[in-house]
Image (cartoon, rainbow, N blue to C red; front, side, top):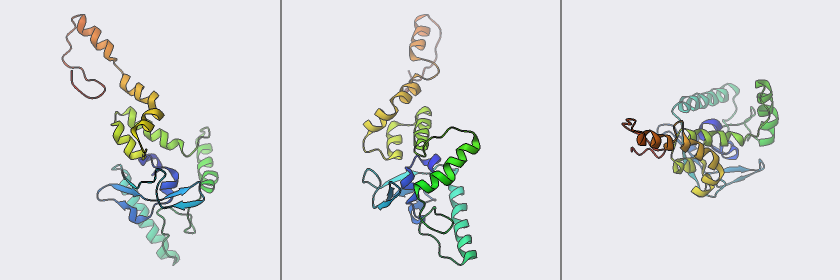
Amino acid sequence: MLFRTGMREGEVVALQPGDLDLRSRHVRTQRNLASGLFMEESPKNGKARSVDLAIDLVPVLKDHLAMREADAALSGQPISPWLFSTPDQKLIRSNNFRDRVWRPLLQGLGLRYRTVHAIRHTYATSMIMSRASLVYVQRQLGHSSISITVDTYTHWIEKAERGDVLEVDRLSRISSGEAVTQAVTPAGATV
């Protein structure tokens, strides 16, 4: 969920099954577990938002919901109100997840340690490099303004705009008489 939505860790931990709309492929962020300690009734910027779900994430979430129900039926325990919970149906705490799951996972993969929050930056960078609209990236991440998105990811925005073929190279081909039937600018407009 973290890798495929760009949501904050506290937003994902605070999700409830009713926040999902798998038919429309979105999740509604309405709560945030702040600092892994207390539940806030709104996400970080104070506004609930709708986050799109990648098409390949939907069957994974359907399977997860089915497993939750099966586990509850087998154990005779009620289903946790949280979409993701500990084996004993409690709220996941950031430090517990970080120390028992995240750190061992990175070590097992031979990767240097990086924070769970770095997943969010990986998601945003991937979106920007695939030339997603910055407004779309801003909405997915829940930034209160486009300037936060631009300021945070300026390096990657510039790199995405630069692309494989620089616009200046297209200009030099045109001026040298080379036939250029169509050039596409980073914004997607045809020249």
